[in-house]
Length: 260
Image (tube, rainbow, N blue to C red):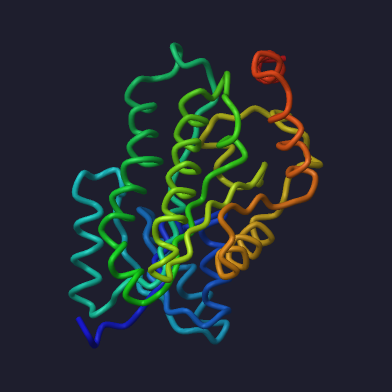
């Protein structure tokens, strides 16, 4: 559609890093489409962005766990005369606990949201991103780099996001599309409560504000970075852990994850 308006589509935009990314994109003049399942939070975010003098975002209220969610988002954009120039795959969740002890349906839902939905949206909008020479920002985690005893499925899904993003970074570069994996360490958001993460699960000094993570992710994508790991302390920690024997890393992570 030649007359379609280019937009930045942000999933999981109702809170945390997603909401912070919405503010960053809006501050840089992008027209926004905010996607999440909680209507009041999305409306409040759209109101706030508009009150700050930015263009009011389009809101799509949908549960991304629905099998037809990606198709419905694509249809709503088409009907509104909008086309993605930027896609931010931020929606996702984690669960703390041993694999065999966690609910099976919850873990399969985690794979579905963190992996399948991200992949399907990327497939559906790849041509649009290339047409508008835009970008894709996939929110992964430092968990992408390491196995995760105590959060096995979550770490595995984020390893997929990192690998997928790095491959697309290479494949789509020639089309003018910037693909970046954003791999933050701990960020104090609703994620911890959803994951049933106990207090003290990670050292507080490692935590970074969602606003800083969002800003660094946006700037990294615009520079064409393949991977963004916010914070020098986290960068050093990840680099050191990757140099250690895998068995030792597994033991360290398992020990840290055991209930105290």
